[in-house]
Length: 301
Image 1 (cartoon, rainbow, N blue to C red):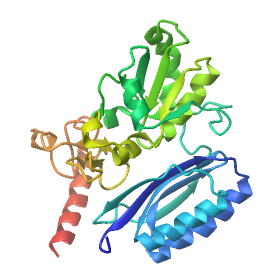
Image 2 (image 1 turned 60 degrees about the horizontal axis):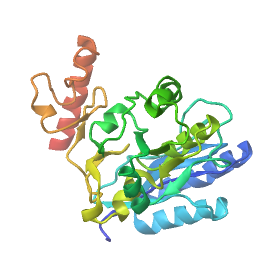
Image 3 (image 1 turned 180 degrees about the horizontal axis):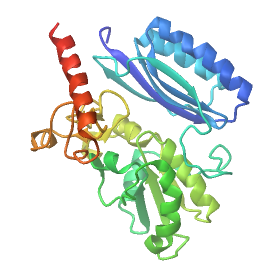
Image 4 (image 1 turned 60 degrees about the vertical axis):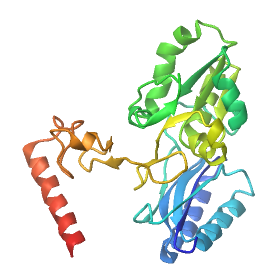
């Protein structure tokens, strides 16, 4: 493991004072000088992010967080990579650690029932359960659990509106039905269960640690996740062994691309793909082409 980088994805809903957030940011950002990279979001409702670095530095950073949070559960998901998956360490203070845009939602006070992979697999085969994927549409396109409902979201902020328009129809207005939700690391589905409880749906469940923790723990013969899992870093996707997957990114529009996507007629590396052929002007594409040329020249040197 000496030549690898440790990656820890984490989150915690825990109330902070605004002053505490700035103090924590100033303390944590100093770890960039020790080679730590990643993205951490701080808000008055908690903390969310992913860090990457040599194992000893990641462990020290992790201890600082646990001390600050008074040893609360950080919902850690751990993997390793031969390369750094972020270029820098960014620590941002925002209104929410995952943006839903609904006032009064507090997962720290009220959220659904955590389930581990064994309980989750049982829910997947329960006829009184509907399963909802709370991720964005492009994440779902890489993989999901069989028969999970895809709300086709552009972003998580659209989820409350989707619920209002669709949930009664999906549940046949039965508030006693089991509603099981999941996402990449557990944070979006946890917040979603808090919203559902506010709407009166008591039998709400969420996959603890999300897909990443599921893949970390589930034996291969019990794995019910099909496809790859999108991640918000330079790996783009992970396979069922939490190794870098087969997808890459369109550097024009940011959409994940399979090997087949890159064989399509309109694909030009760094310039455009079939998702964004109509989204940019010729001037934009000329700028993207120049950027790609600079990247290639740098690699050749």
